[in-house]
Length: 179
Length: 409
Image 1 (cartoon, chains in turn red, orange):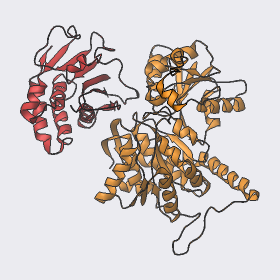
Image 2 (image 1 turned 180 degrees about the vertical axis):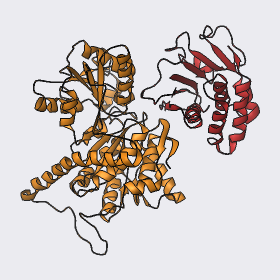
Image 3 (image 1 turned 135 degrees about the horizontal axis):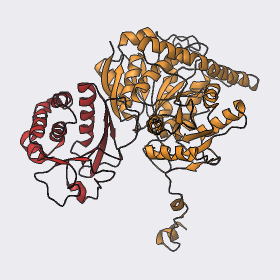
């Protein structure tokens, strides 16, 4: 079982990303996945999160994620907005981050970290700063799901914009750096 | 062939109603049920559901319209949550007393005040004694399956009780997972066309239904409803067996999970049951003997089955998701205690409360309850888990000299 938390800002497609990710794993790979969105007083630009559970076995657990195996951060500004992205993380917890480079002062610097410049990629591919599909590609690049399954879920989940989003995911997959 | 598709609980409920070939929809949107109202409207608009969609002005009318429509001999559907269900309350009693086999998804949400959008079971508990069957789903597949099973059960002439299929708000309604979506032909084979053999309204030959009932007949009519519940207790497992034969998925009135040699068992409804099973597996792997019982059918309440599952369990706890104010246990716990004292004299159950207004029932919550039960702790009065009871005792008082207060005075 992999328990995943996705942090980002309202408008960045956090909830959509979790749903697409779950679809890729469940339908594309025949495994099991739950996307568990946290609905609250959402507004554009405010910190939001969505949880995801992936497993080869049927998933019995029906709660939010408290001890994440993976933390995906769509926008590092959530740290300045008081979000504790380290909550429940262990020394093995993998962080996948939207960043051009990784400053050493970040709280997860001692953890396994992968990063990709999803802001740049999404601006280039979509013309707007919506990092979700680039980060889904990055998650695939980190081995959480096959890229083909992820692309198929994106193809069926983004209407007319699917092509640019598949391209973003591909770049997220290939341009992922870190250890 | 059934297809494996990605759906959330609201979508699963909408698909089930479409597969049941409902002919009338009268729904009013309310969080977190709104996507059901919207989805059914989409189906009617795109022609994939041949039904009349009545845009009502309230849930009170939604249920009244569904009753009227169903009395003409079609399946009529509505769905609601929380305050919507509360506004429907009066007409819910009419549906039950008129023996209208309406199947209604109820997306569980707390009741105001305090105002909240999130999940607990208060809304459905308020309706518990209205003469509706209540089934609680653990996952999105169960939402779809239980709606079909509910139709199959309640449309039998010796049952005819409306059914609430309860799904936890957000934890099911907005959580997506892959489920098996049956084909229309498979559902048609399981669910024959609805034939209204009881009261029937014909606009060309009007009649008055639900006039004043004299005292001399009221008790007998109530008694008939109780007979319907008794028959449902037999019809529901039969419908579930037929469902398993048709679709390959098995259900039962209750599900006893790893209870055989258990030293402690927790009992629950809805999504919390999945988390309980997850914790049971972890405890069993560590050699700690715990189990859980899911109550799938809360009304009718399968007391004998429940007590048979609990016969050899020394420590029993019930986790309620609504407060049961003014009593020493939550509503489910109180029911379990009544069953135990009747069938297993001398036995009782501890009362735990958690998960109000979307407060998560976590593996930690469930573990704490198991640890207390394994330690032999008894809670005859409700133990409010995950609740800051000290803070709750601090009364916030308004400043006596504030200008606002003077104006009011």
